[in-house]
Image (cartoon, rainbow, N blue to C red):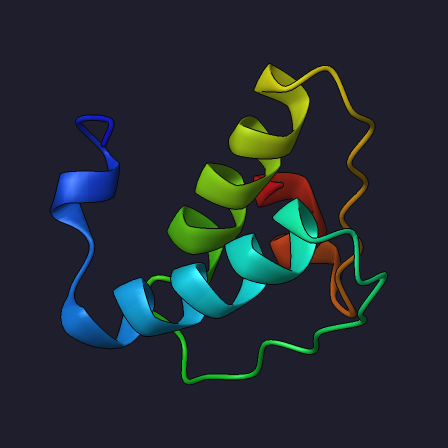
Amino acid sequence: MTENECKMVEEQKKVYAIISNSIENKKGSLFFLDAPGGTGETFLLNLLLSKVRHNGDIALAVAPSGIAATLL
């Protein structure tokens, strides 16, 4: 587990595990992450993107707002 993975709260760990499992099993799922501002969505997404890219795969993130998009 990376240093940043250790910083996740329980809910983030649950979501991270679900999405990571889907990625590792190449399920081709689509996830929509919606939560109030300041709850760590960008942090979680950046961890997932980093994990995928570290494995040599391509990862793209999209955001519905301009501010969120600049943070990814």
